[in-house]
Length: 411
Image (cartoon, rainbow, N blue to C red; front, side, top):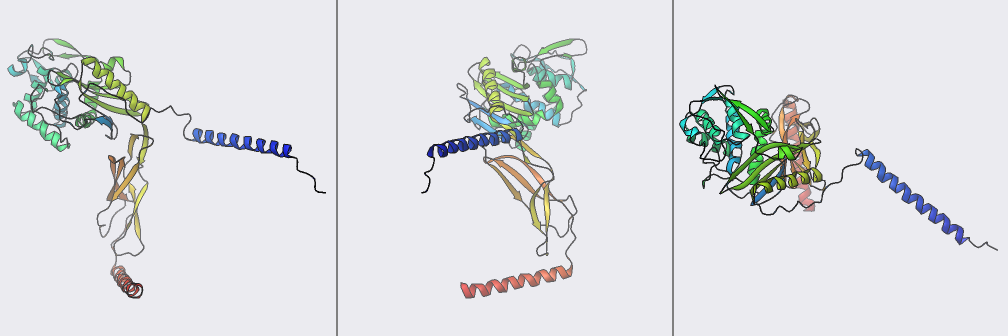
């Protein structure tokens, strides 16, 4: 007689087996977490924060320039003294001697007492270009920026404003136009949140600009006195990761702020246009920057030396050259973002040397360009011989004949 199964014992064994599986699964998940670099800090919610009572805002990754989030980010709006970022960029782009002394003109002095932002420069005083840049960016000195505009514009502020607009066009800032070097209220002086983020990123690539906008207090000098100046960007005092950039306030533009911050290998730029009051622009900027640090994470999107394409050699059947990235492309991205790499290659030359650029790879993050790198030949190749060309011609002809016969038979 066959013995009856012991169901109690079988049930116990199944329970023990299930517990073991769950335990092993948990251990595997833990191992994966450890392998990815330890316990990661929690990331913020996918939706950006609510930024109320502003006309527009934008958030970008400083390293790549990748646009991350915003509202009305392409709307043309008055921006006030944020304009002085472009004024400083033009001065730096022109390569002006930073130690050259600039005499203060009657026009520059006329803004003392007539505008809120000035440092009290006096007709006939001489101030170096370096100190005028500091006076323009730290306390937002309108008198200082007009002195710079006259100096760099060949004595003409209008010429300098033309240089500002030329620079904007060269940078592709399609929603930006300038009419004054200081951002005084006019209908033709405007920009957008997205354009301002790109402008700030370009300016921050100059070490002197980055140093100045990250300075809380400084002293500038004329030939006979010293002037203490203080930064109008309160984030430098209240928010430790802050590294700059520039405030801007006028009756027409309202309260504006382009802010930058860096921590743990990440850096971001936020833009607030038309905040309801001066304090709100600082609060909103900090909220946006904190959201960025919590939500996005740095990633290597293209690695220098890695192969991203194989390019067929001219007149060589079955032969190709590997194309490697000439530089890295890094960006801080949403962990759930869709990453796409687009490779473009022109017609390959008859011959090429190792390291010769033969194409390009561009990285798109959720449809936004995060950067690009040239693609270079890993190895050189020589021009095809007459035999190679003849054999290639024979092969191509045979392919055509075979394709035609196949179409006749099966088509």
